[in-house]
Amino acid sequence: MTKNTKILITGAAGFIGSNLSEYFVGSGYDVIGLDNLSTGHLSNISHLQEKDNFHFVEGDIRDVETCSSAVIGCDYVLHQAALGSVPRSIKDPITSNDVNVGGFLNMLIACKDAGVKKMVYAASSSTYGDSKALPKVEEHIGKPLSPYAITKYVNELYADVFYKTYGLNTIGLRYFNVFGRKQDPNGAYAAVIPLFTKQLMNKQSPTINGDGTYSRDFTYIDNVIQANEKAMLTDHPEAVNTVFNVAYGDRTDLNLLLDLLKQSLSKYDPEILNVDTIYGPLRAGDVPHSLASIDKAKRLLTYNPQFDLKAGLDEAVDWYWSNL
Image (tube, rainbow, N blue to C red):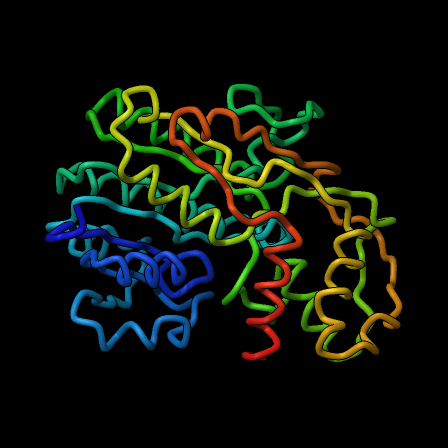
């Protein structure tokens, strides 16, 4: 399958995109990586640039010509490029919409015109919005609670229309709080696990928004890589032109998350166990609880996540301790 199979990975220098690039290059695929480096880092993929089966293109998905050029000759597209973060979208909804909706539409057009076999794209658990039902099941969503959530839901609507109108095969993967190696701990919109890890390593008190009882389905990066590969390669007729939750299928509140992080880090520095926690106000747009049903992905994609939170944290902490 890998011989002469060509994949375009957008957002290839970002957290998830760089991990996907590394995996598929290592598996023998020809990989084109596209990124404008606004939030991604060349250091994430610098070791791949010497590989014969990896080619990096610096470009922006907001430019349709860039998308069209990058996708030429590709069999599959793994579309990860986006502006993440609910707070970022609340502060600047216009740019989030330009990238996440306009850029997504450009990629759909490019895939349609190039005749790619399938476009697998990063959807989001934020699409569940104000739905209080747990676990989250793909067919039942609520109203979005942030501009970011709206953009990711619009992606799903566009993908559905492009299948019905043009016959473009797509699969959306609703990621639930992905974490792991190469996730950036810096910047105003850093995700909670890399941010807390960096703060604890520096003996700084992490700040939890709220009382720490909000819970998430934290999902290690290797589970996400598995889901992308299975979505890309599946020929199950019910699996195409739909969306899947990508998660571990368990939820952990922020207080317990912090305790587990301290435990993982304490093998390097026992004093980290004594770092205090600060509690601050809740963030606008935050969903109280998130838990995925992964039954649909198990049934149609044979998705079988191998890393629970504790195993993933141990792996992630090892990487951060060696690289920060």
